[in-house]
Image 1 (cartoon, rainbow, N blue to C red):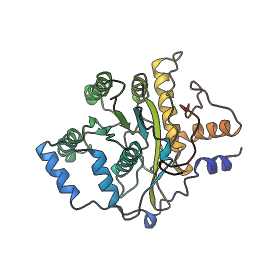
Image 2 (image 1 turned 180 degrees about the horizontal axis):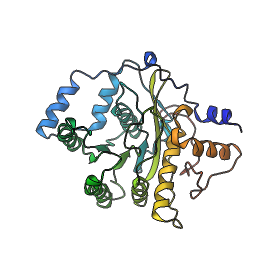
Image 3 (image 1 turned 180 degrees about the vertical axis):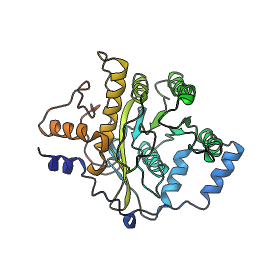
Length: 313
């Protein structure tokens, strides 16, 4: 299979464009913003899934969700997405679309514990955004983490966030384990394409996977002027016991990022283009990637279901 065929196969969600004239308009609901502000100031809890639905409903161009039938209906999981970026777009729009889609698919209160940055790094904004973002995280039950890539003086803070997530998983039963949400890259890329996660991200993903969570990859992008979230098949993250910790970290990050990239247009594959193309070739030839294979994108939990949506006959 040549490169053109691979790109066509893996970017079936549509043509990617960075033309600002085709970009969706993002408007905030007039009632929602002051309501959230009051909750943040007073320390009141809110359900992000509820606010996400209202936030998404305000978009001028109706967003699109692809492959929602792949969302696990009962078991907990790690939802992993890309940190899509362009000027005029903020990552929380994609996060809100994912949260709304998962809540609708599971037909229950399915709050996601997202990992979110606790500050923007600039001399003026750092203290202000730290105060705002940490309060926002408490309001929604998120886990706040230091900016990526981590600076030496943020090491203890990052470790504390990791322990908080793992403690949350350890203290919950199989029936009430939370859904964990993460954008492994942890930061914007200049052109919106995939970039390497910071060191340690892969090991963190492995620790969560060992606690019984599969990975649900989601690619977010603006496609033909429409904000789109495309879900991929859930998979069990590899373990690679024969590898040292540094190699395990690299391979886990690569496996998750390539699975996300397989749900994106080829123009956004970025640093993981080679892995995505390699897996596409393997799958097209009938070979099933193995969980410890360097080229692995995803080891599905089951055969890919039909594209029939819940409620359809």
